[in-house]
Image (cartoon, rainbow, N blue to C red; front, side, top):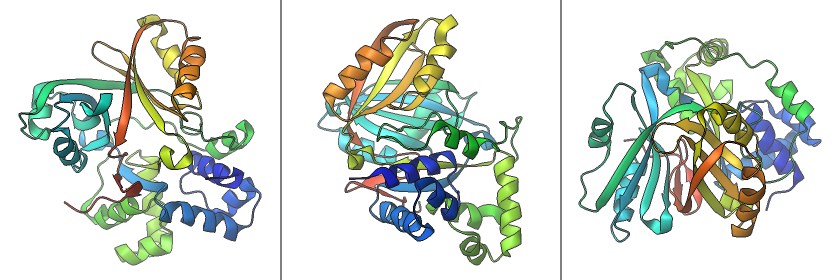
Length: 331
């Protein structure tokens, strides 16, 4: 189980994924060696991964939320095959093992049926499919990540870490070049790989690596995701809330939900429900308390549906294998 030092390290990384260990150590009030040792222990155990990813918008792709209802006795192979696809992320089994919930990357102008026909393996076990466009994610780095694992940094520390963050760049984004391929591959495996290691893998100088990283980051082409396994941090219940919110209250409700410590993601979507919220709690009683207090206090929610996760398959870029976050094998 993690302690206060680990919590501060996790929170610091969520605010600034490539923050040097000396700065992390200052925030956690430990030595630089201790901060590095704690981080590497979390990473080796498969609880934590920092990954560098190319923004879907770079290739003109949007994110779609898919709900695939299947026969429970046939859902396993279908779910596993979807999770292994590079264009599928955040895949989970829910609703007693009869529903797959995942996000897909595909051009926004594509027909919804076309998106699934290309990416969903043909299977007689599929009973029903719905797919909706993710219209807008709520929150911002440093204030909207899941921090339900306990007290981390103070609000002032978070502000200092995120003060220099650049505003979202104007579209369209600039695609990476072929020369960037080894750099991006290395960051997809370890988003905190030091400049010396990246220089070794690319054959570039340290200075060139630093310049290229800055260009990719500031342009919005490259972003970092901090992946955690909540189950290994004592939080065994993960639920997806499907909310219907009055349009006039949608933005305010989404932003308020994104600030909750129990929320890992909140986004506006198309379809019957217009707000999707991923919630992580310690157990069923903790989730009930959250639902009847924090969620109940938000104005504008007209109805809701709950999908309880029974098996986590994939995070943004990591597969879950024997209870550990692992880098996917190359296709």
